[in-house]
Image (cartoon, rainbow, N blue to C red; front, side, top):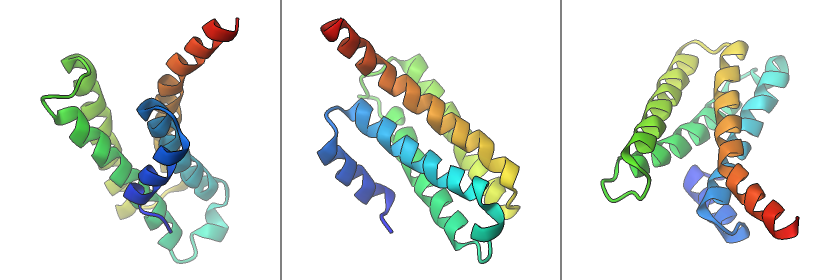
Length: 133
């Protein structure tokens, strides 16, 4: 199984921009969590798959939060603060799921990852639409 750092490197070689890379990784994490949600009974026999999916998502969000906390980050401070706040929620919620695994608790992590990925991908789609339209 790939670690978040390995996955970041693999996807980085296949995508063009950092935004696309981040969106792809968030969707990968959401997909793993969604598979667990959809097949909870079969996949929760020993808990290893849940632990691996949560660890991947946690490492990914740790990178986002760490990056947003850098004073030289190019995003405005308010956006960096929003990323940090969402990331802290994700990390806290992940710990809660690890302590008390519940299928329905995965929904918020899945939704956050998908929404952020969609937001990251939206500017790229808008540029493509302008170029082709």
